[in-house]
Image (cartoon, rainbow, N blue to C red):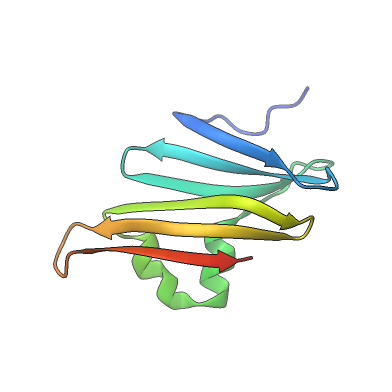
Length: 103
């Protein structure tokens, strides 16, 4: 058994169909959640927020919202995930958002 990381609050995980990776949704606070994908053999982690930011820098606005929840919804196959980024802004302009992305 190997420790992947210490988590503070709650999490959910799911194995990839080929069992070479798993994702972790880390609900680290009442106002936020992040997610990553880990390679089983090395425990190398890829932060999904970094993947989204490298594809589109405008995503930073939503990741930095007052309440921002980035979750993997499900595996499409062993190499693709459905990711949901949702939440709301605390400062004007107020409003909620939901983004659905395949990564």
